[in-house]
Image 1: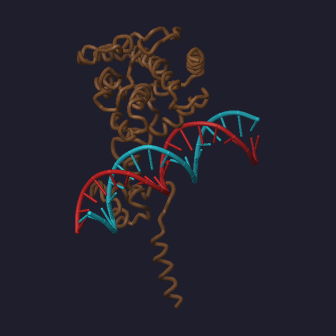
Image 2: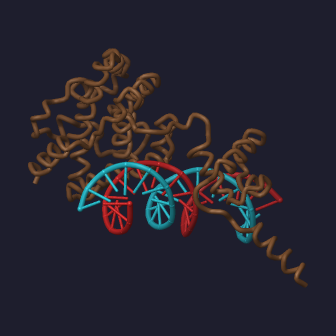
Image 3: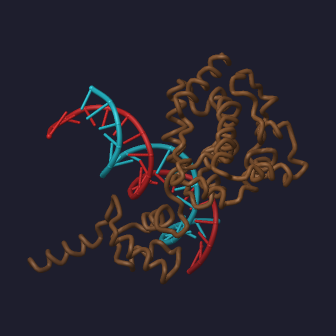
Length: 260
DNA sequence: AACATCCACAACCGCACCTTA
DNA sequence: GTAAGGTGCGGTTGTGGATGT
């Protein structure tokens, strides 16, 4: 009778699903299993690998952490710019946004948005989806980012032609009200009277990829060499540059105050 | 030193969609 | 047609380290 109970207890413990942080052992089991059997079939993987995890948990761990080519660490200014741009088109479609950032996961981008952008919106006492805040991002923040990227690209020896080429390569159809001003000559940051017309990065159109590609930073990104992105890794100090400095916050608050 | 609070990130959950039998 | 299982996505929560008091 007691033996029976022990057996039941053991089988129950086998069925217990483990939660929480993954251990190195679990990681190596998962890596080995995927290396042998490939990705997919996560539920059967979870059963036959001996991992006491759900298939979903295995999949998430693999895609967000263990998968080769996952880029981890600070989001670069260029990536921040692209996230802001794409989010203005696609909203919280993190997976779609992540597709445009090599090696970044939807989870990472989502976390970035919540911990940085939403937080700043709160500090500015406006909703992250309010027109006020979105306009501030579009007409103030993003140009400022462009300026920082431009400054850093020259100070770090990244050839200006990397950015300039985006103009020479650009499809003529992309030339719009968003053109040379945004690419390399943002208006003076002391000029808080920036208007929608002078900085029509995006427009209020639909969320199609095509519209996102035209006349936007998206198109700029398409021409950035991935090696350029690597050059902005935190090791050279650039990746640590924070967009949300006191100076920038003051600047943005001024702009918002002017709008009211 | 101890405790509280904040912050960033990893992981979980619920739902919707897709595939297959 | 439909039920069941698998997968992907977005929202939310949990956790550990950093920082402040």
